[in-house]
Length: 502
Image (cartoon, rainbow, N blue to C red):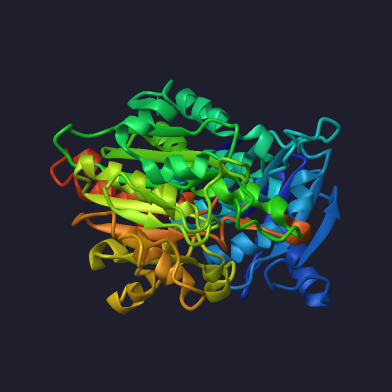
């Protein structure tokens, strides 16, 4: 699907020939004399349309309107979040077989509003078909975003379109069954990203991982016949002297729990345990489009966690790459075991910031549900940057504590540290475990167990937190380039506005 940006007023939007024209109607709607305004005003007056986000009225080939279908859509106060929710509520309209070209009229839109609308339409029209040969994808081929002042939102629009490509990649690979998203297949996907400018990829196999001394990672993988892969991506957008931001994504492509096997119900959803990895891959897809002036390293330890005669057992002690020994009290706390070795590896790049992303704990779901990701950070400035990026991207997070007292439960009689500390504050103690392996570099951990996918009838990957991470990186790239030429400074100002508001 292609997105286009076009200068339109409401009267001009009425003349656009398309299959679907979406006209948001906000609180305090002030109608003009054009045909669409008259229709919306009448519908509001008669009570056939309400401005509550998602409330809508379908019109078919109304007089003096070029579109075959018109959707008058309530958008509440007209904020980016309200418009996003409204567009998602009418996803069936974007997926309708007869809808190939759509126009979404936004009028005097802010950069944040345009970004929210692009992302919402992409999400609303997404259909998973990879392993459903008889299913049909949405026929939507082109979506035109109509705005009053195109120049003011062009940068935000371009960023949003790139972000959508990254989110869709993360969503698609998160949704794939584990036998269609093996560690080797993730590695091939990463290699394909290296076809883009400034991106390089290196894939380490079991032998290389063993030589690196990643004993914790190796221990998790040994219960599966699928060979592990340690994926290393580099985006080189700035001077090589600039310290990179390192992103580490958990890539458990299926998690049975190992010997500490999970309950049967909903175990199929453990294919989503690689959504941290998928988010890193999605970020690199977006970077390939935008080419910002920043250096980024992506690290993905990828393997399965399965039980067999060689599998890791409760009570085993393994030696991590850092040299610290770990008593494995629960083999279902495997994500932190593969991440700890990847985090140790990450320190060799002397990162300006180190961020890991993982569907790590059910405890985080209990704490925050599916609304906000859990954010842990050793650096207040880094935490503030990530929180602001999440707000801008409508991809929210919430900072959680890292008090040293939480580490008490990780003490072991038989190793330097245990991999679990009991049920209380389970998400916090998992973060405290990871903190042992990051050295003195500014570090943040995003627990996305509640936000990376949805269950029930809406089961599927969300593509989060690609939006948060991309906004974070773009903001850092902008802040690191204070001495560009005036024309480029103006372009950066547009990006800053999009990051601050969208």
